[in-house]
Image (cartoon, rainbow, N blue to C red; front, side, top):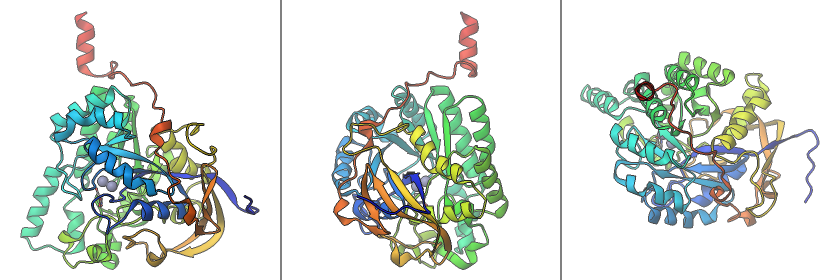
Length: 429
Ligand code: DOR
Ligand code: ZN
Ligand code: ZN
């Protein structure tokens, strides 16, 4: 099959380490078919999907249900297993069953999965560390948030900014610091999801300097929207963690440029139109669609000179491939070739339009945003899943579980250099 790529760039397909496809359980928001169609249209060739579905992906039975739904996938995928207080005894079975990593919700989230107490997180880290799989963290402190939200509600605040006020940066910073300490202690590999504030960068940089195997992502909404957008976007902008003040955004851009933040992922979290447009901020569902809009939005930044195309590819493809054991190639175990590619046209001008997204819950605060630079063809293992800007519907079901070819480096031992316990142990000898 031949396409004319003159004047265009051929890039490795994007790997989105953070999507919620809602299936099974909340299929009015998204399904594997609609979510991965949206990915294909967005130049994304592999996604890693989150466990806050119904049932949550905390048992092998639930994992198998999800793998069944994922048979509809257009693009390749990895599945995160849940790391929760109640399923610590299931973690090894989930690895055996085919998860590509784990997700731990330190803050409460959609799907009512309670945050495990720190003791349970530590145990979970110890178990997973033995196998080398990465643990992604929604790093927000549930207790701080609950107390602040209660006060704000009692004071009658239900405007969009109340959401931001309930989650000052300490909410995330405390959790990032704690996760880094637990990872250092256990040798677990971790990934900090959706870094939203400048304050989180310090514990992140310090942990990296100490040799903790920690990666981090931010998302387009934290780089492109700021506090001022709440007036216009209202409840539509509600997302956890919240979009913050410009000063945080500036620090995030610097962290993107200096490599403190490794990846750009989307936190694709679709909800229905009705669920995103409520007057009361507290009852509006958090998050929005994103897997299809990331590339045009971020390529616009590339065109504007805020990020080089090489850095963009590093953050959307190379870094996630390395962090999740897909580097340097998918290899011969899956059908087709290694060609996960996206062909982009940097001159193509578009406007984000909710009604044109393949995602079911297509409400987005980026609706109406202008973009320059767009994916035009997407190939997964050598097969077109989007061609000339159109979804290749016959490619439904082409997506494979990348766990079959995932190669995580051998497990890291506990950080014997720096933990006090290790130093004491050494001195005792
Ligand atoms: O805004 C969010 N939406 N943050 C989360 O942590 C969960 C996500 C969702 O699943 O809706
Ligand atoms: Zn999250
Ligand atoms: Zn998420």
